Length: 132
Image 1 (cartoon, rainbow, N blue to C red):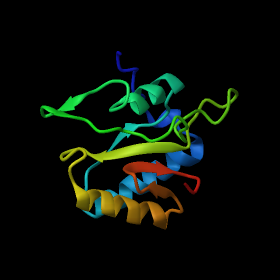
Image 2: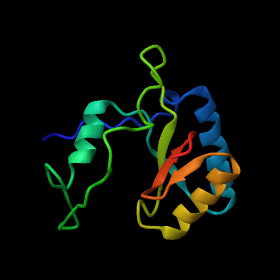
Image 3: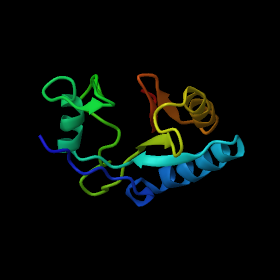
Image 4: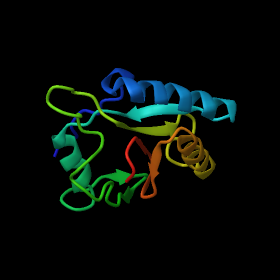
């Protein structure tokens, strides 16, 4: 199965979340981190593909099979509505360390909470507007 395209533009977020990304990144940079917007709006086909990793298809990372990426077919990354094709969730990683910086993700959660946003414990890169 071919990976559906990942969307990572700020413009694909709701106007509120675009502001939140800016504020969050500013806070993270002041703490010495290098945040990078990894994914924003997600189509259902991509969510299904991500859900399938470790279940219906396998990816490897450094020669090791990847465990499941997400636990649900639902996502706050989906468009708000057909009339409003913007998301209210985004994924952030460290530009220099990618997914491998626990200190970065701890700081991300702390700063997100200060802005009234939520970090999902199962996916520390994931920030959303609504309480999980």
